[in-house]
View 1 (spheres, rainbow, N blue to C red):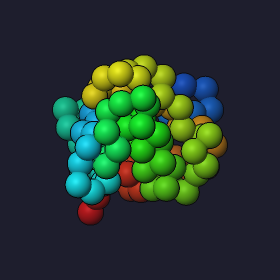
View 2: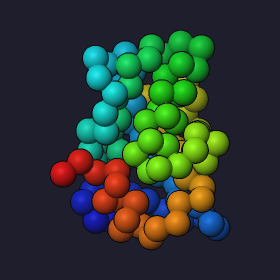
View 3: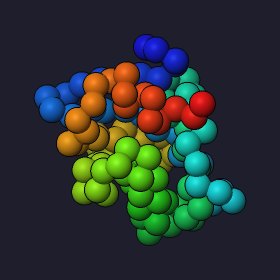
View 4: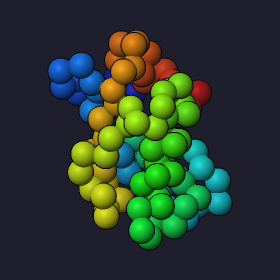
Length: 101
């Protein structure tokens, strides 16, 4: 559990927990939060808009298409589990791209 971010590997994809703050002024990845990755998105928490913002934020940070990010659980919660497919790096590279410096 390097840098406080828990990432697991399931088959060919990475799974991590998120703590999402919807309706923020600015979309950003804030950093580790109790083993999860805290992210803020501008979209409101209604009709899946915040989930779309989360997917777009992660995809952009990782250089992936939105279809490569899947919300596994927590669709209506601030606490989510996401799967990241088609990421070619290892866990250390994933953390380097996701954690702010």
